[in-house]
Every structure is written in structure tokens, then in C-alpha cells.
Length: 227
Image (tube, rainbow, N blue to C red; front, side, top):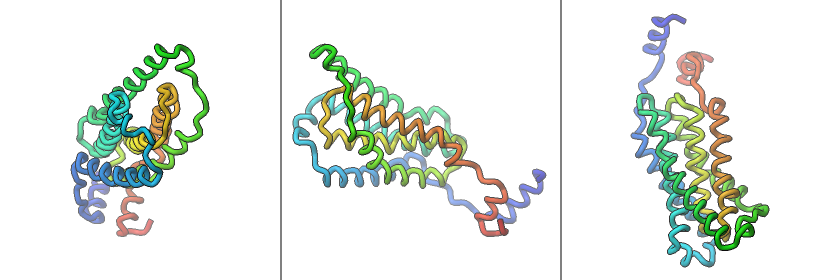
């Protein structure tokens, strides 16, 4: 199809499109809805018995806050990745908080090693962390995926990876509130590792989950011509 034909088809067959809200507003809306859902889940399960003492612990509070900020900024980055013309550096917004989260866990690993030696870095199988993060992140992940599909799939791998990071980080923050696991090496492997794994897998699937429709598909979706 020639350029002139494409322009003519678009002008005659496509309806006006309402601009999407600013990415920051979409991120706040997603985070507020998802946070409310996660709060209900945590309330239903029950807070960990030592939550009062943990919330005043600087390292735990840093891990929790960094996980929540990683979630919100990853959502913002995912929405920015679907807006043509926005600077690519906006997609890096969650990584300082992800680094802070990793640093807090790393400091805990160092403290455990200094106090207990090699025993402080012992790793055992945890059958709760990964399934719990996956289960809790399903609804927030589905919501943000529906929302980013309304944007332009100019960076599908980045958008889906950041979307998964947002949902999984929020689920990991919820896990900190009800799952008693104080060994930092276990948190690093089974909680932080699960978040990174889910984000990486979704990024690999980005080009499948988000793609540009062909002209015929776009016109058919507009119900102006048969597919």
C-alpha cells in the first residue's frame, strides 16, 4: 500500500481517538487500586505477629518502602513506555529504588554473615514466597496489562517487563507484611529473586503480548470494513 493510500484509508475509516491521561495519573490510579486490593489480601491473611517491632526497624522499613516505590515507579515507567515522544530515561525511574531495595537486603546479608558466619547465609527451600508473589500479583498484573495495551506498543519488552516489575514488587511488599522470614539471604533469593524473574520473563514475552496491529486489523477493529 502506498503512503497516499494509507493516509486516505486512515482519514476516511478511522474514528477520532481520545488522548490517554498523563502516565503519572495512570500510574497513581493503578497503584491506588492495586494497593487497596493488596491491603485486603494482607488483612485477610493477617499481619505477621512481630509487625510492630519490624516497622520500627530501619532495614525492614527500607525494604518495604523501596519495594512500594519500585512498584509505583515501575508502573509509571511502563505507561511512559507506551507514549510516543516521551524521553526514554523515564523508563529507568524504578531502578534507583530497586537498587535501594537490593542494598537493604544486601546489608542484611552482611549483618547475618558478621553475626553468624557461614550459617547466617544458609539457604533452604521456601515453598511460600514465589507462589505467594505470583498469586498476589495476578490481579494487579492483569489490570496494568489492560491499561498499557491502550497505549502505543513502541517498546513492548520494556513496557511488559516494567508492568510485571510493578505488580511483583507490590506483591513482595505484601509478603513482607505477613510472611515471617528474617534471613536476608532467603529474602534475596526467594522474594527479590522472584520479582526479578517475573519481570524478566514478561519482558521476553513483550513482543508477543504487545504488538502493532496491521492496517487491516486496525480497520477491522474499527468496524468500518470486514477483516
